[in-house]
Length: 627
Image 1 (cartoon, rainbow, N blue to C red):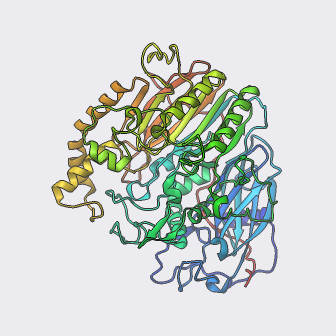
Image 2 (image 1 turned 180 degrees about the vertical axis):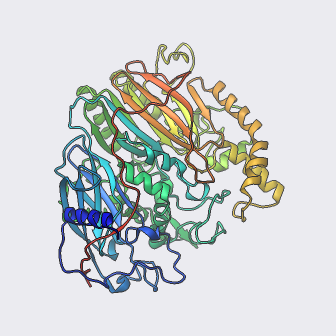
Image 3 (image 1 turned 60 degrees about the vertical axis):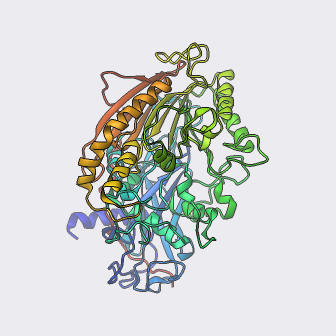
């Protein structure tokens, strides 16, 4: 190291604290011959970066993973002592500055193969509404430095809330430029994810990239459906080794509501090989998600303190994900779950289940009682209806995206709210009766941008499309948060044309992205445009419908008098820094309506946080690992 790097390391080690003598041969960062486990080798032993999540006013969850290469393999259930190491002590620090000199909290935990070498700390006793920087140290190295932010205190006056929203992030079909652009921002409070955060398989769709030369969709380990707990864990490693996603993790805390692919069970020969609960346990191992008490109350478990890893919920306890993140008097971020408690025989509610419905009503009523301005509602599947219209390639859409003209009351989307429109109408009537109308819903699953006013009856005189008013005006607005690569309407049609022309089928090898984009996407565009126009005509409250191959993310800017939503698209197949604003909408407080801004200027928060340093692992004072 040169003098500058040496002094930097001394400062960081001082912040993290030291213990034990130097140990020169404790850990070997080099990868064994034939090693294919997905990892950013330059960052070892922190080869999957760092992450924070679920911030409250006084605490935030910090996450990382220790990777110890071993010639015997990567599976922690088989190799429980890689390089002879049975446990690793990991120190962590939170500070007010990127150099980690103004320390506010620190601690140390121990991780082992039993939790796949993951580290998860609930850092408590923190200052509210404060941008903080954090890092971990283990095995003689310090991790990349991450940036996080605590929420405002209850009832605090807050001028703005800036949130990036994503959904359906498919590693194989997208190089995650949208995550890179999120990582560039210096005004973020939070990143929300509506699920399919990590897919159980590649879906057999034309791919932009493969890992370690694996090109078969159905048999190769990092493409096919996961079959075991170690394979599920490895899929997270595949995602987290991506530099764009890693940069987004460094930039801001995440709040994730997992969808069905995040914990999809798997079976072979009729025998379950990985259950939903096991996949959910892996989700809690590999994310900075804060566990709740598994009684349906949505209450968070108490922090175990600075020197104990957050316990991973086990069995059915791991299926509870609905929760609330308060942001002062301006907003409440409410994450609710339309997947795991749906279709229960004993429940009247077939979408949320009776217990979760009662919880959601209590939460919403409490926000109104306390005078909270906005509710940012994060859930997986379109809340607004998508009524039947003349749908080209109907059979393909039904197969690919769960659409069917035979759904109740002509709804095309047959999962979640679309399968139970009466329950959605009851929710809207509750919101209107209680005067809880400033609701911004951000969703996923549909693989496109769907922007809607939330109304149970979209026809005049109940609803006025130009204003969102009418006899039964809107009770909020919704934006479905596009996708990163999972195919939307244009690509579903293009895939049909491509496979018909080439004689291939889902699961066949795919290598010619340029031809697919220039020929088959072009051929699919007229049908897609007709589909979009028919959809808008049949659904007057559908204010924006973009099912083209324009993948990206949504920005949500909450202010005292309005909510501004922006739809951004980024290149799909090659790493690039450019992005394009597709649409900007503004919804006034007290009269929700997704009104398009005709001369948009991208909104930027007034806060300018110093960036986290470029991701790097640096040498530090070595510590003897447990053996």
